[in-house]
Length: 575
Image (tube, rainbow, N blue to C red):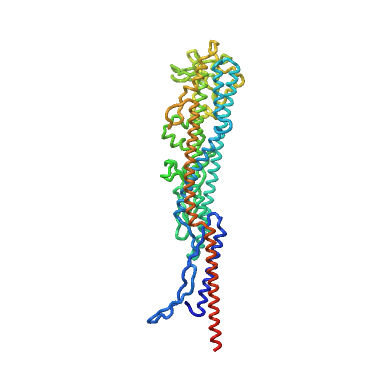
């Protein structure tokens, strides 16, 4: 023990350091419920010793000067941090996929409200009644009404799907803005931490906690990797591209589609926009899987599930399974839109073909059109089966189709050089939606709406066309459709719709199961992090009592030393 006045230094160090420990503990208690706060722990060490009798031959003595604080530890497990950010990012990806499918399911109202299938069934029943007596005005009017209601409901659902895509697009924009904002915040904190920790005198604990919170949030939005440098700053990469370094924040930019307004995130510093070359943030060529670490981040999920356009039946028709899986099949929005439009397209074209049947021309057709222009059509061109087609109450050819394209008539009248009149079918044009029987480009024929009796219902001998009723009846049972290139076997219209809804529900269930499992994993890792860095009020209160007792002990020690010195001084003075 140090002798004399030096003993007071020992007690003084105990008082000071115990007071610092109590202040640190009080700070921990005050931040029990502060998000991201990391508890601080006092680490003590011995102060330097005074060596007495350095040249003594027999015994050297050391006099201690008390205790000091070696460090205020910032307790954090970097491995748990990385694991949590990885799993929370993966959970955010699948949660975004799950929420998308859940929302889509509500648009068809199969669980509550008026199910879309009811509108479909009403239309079928109207056609069934029409089949019994095509000449009955009541049945003709019923077909027109139910067709209008069915088409209106279908178009309303498709419009809602497009609106939902726009809503997802706004989420994409918000996430990009938030990612860029977080990048700038991390950059600012890097600079502040570097200034505080210069010289290794102090640890910028509160600033580090704030930066770690931003890294946690960023890890949920996108796949990140990061590395702390010797000066305390952190370099962050996002989707394998440098995002924040010691001098820059490389922001994500937005490429906006002129037609849909859909946003595609890209790296401006790696792109040549003047030449139309964009380095997109996300690569969807790799399979989405945990093994590839390609299923991480809410932003990637939103972009993927939204798709990059408004889909129609051409996004399925004629595709191989591989093409489909790499394009339409990746997005639940595009899948539902394409399958739904394929369903509508197949049904309305089948109904129209029953009312206005086509055949292939046996020879080439040459003649003039209605405007007097010379036209030529090759053999095999689709034309109206004028000899066998039904007609409406006006008895005119060509007959009226029930559903018509908004920007295109069904037939082009051609006056052949052979003296015959041909009604050439205007084929659908994949490059022009106004010439396609796609859900947004069709309407119930306004001629039939004004006069339902124009609906074809009799043959050209003015007899009721009962075979027409059989054709309409067969549509529901004999039509062969394929849900997607991945499907096995064909189905009729009712089976098609049931499979479409069932597939959507199955996909949603899978997404939900994955998201729920990953949520449990992320929560378990976060709980482990909390055990390391979290504040326990019971533990901190125990520490507070310990440091208070240490403070009191140091105080009593100083009192005793003071009294001893007083006795020595007064005793020596008395002699």
